[in-house]
Length: 422
Image (cartoon, rainbow, N blue to C red):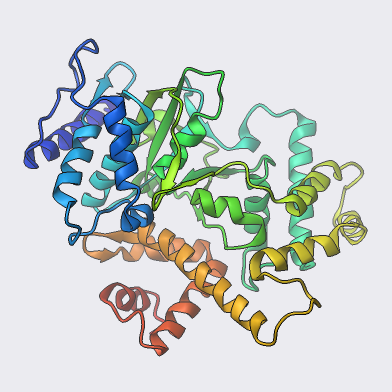
């Protein structure tokens, strides 16, 4: 059944190539046959399309772009330069750049089917399941350490030592922070950006190949997997650069790779970079010293912590609280509490933060909830219900923008109508 699904999707992609007048390749051709688009051409094409601002934000080329037809044909042609390993149900790409266009095509197919996909990169190409860290082979002590670290982070949130929105789901937020900094939780990291997935699949320099997975919204919906979107916060700077979010595997624990929409495998080749608007983005690592210091402390502080009272005492005694708060304000707003700041500059900095938050969240909303007919009501409500604190910031910005004469387009009208906040 999986093989039939993969073959069907591959056939759709080939038909797209034919429809645009490009030359399609058979997915069953022999690997010895020369490629129509070699690695250098695919890399050049990747750099060209990622210079386009709209493509950098949405993985789409606007209808008014003068070279749209030429670029679309070339991208579909690059995606067609692959083979289907029918025995493993894996698409074999010639390079990381070809793999990018295969994943891009997967997104296009899903959107046409009123769905969407998102991505995860893995260095282990023999992986049978995608599993959250807490469900992997952890010792009893390591699992206990991870759970205690999350409890400590949650208490830091409750004590407002970590900045958050008033209606955030604190247990969810604590897990998201912990997961992002290497604490094992029931969350699985995924990204909106196929380039980020490929980047992470290539991080392990000891491996000759990497793999990237396209995960289908419809399958996640069938499995009732909550989606956790990170807020714009001091702890999530590199997560924002990664355009990353999480699937909550608490209930099902793992996803079989055969259940993914696409699996793409590609060789390790030097030089692949995440590029947006012509600039290189480095998804990992990003220097976040105070947050990393706090996480390291939380990981080690679990010894002797057995109840809520002992966690309270532990957090109250944490010596780095003031540095952590100052760091968060400076990272988010550009100033520290009590610092000499020009009159009115603080308010402008906060407004800028909220504006950045709006565009960050809107990227997730549009990617996850839009289909060819507009917003999917079911998807929009599911994402909103799992991320109420994030959506509060977003909706406040939509409403204030409309008061200034902005955001009166069809999509924002529909969004507010669905959410009953007109």
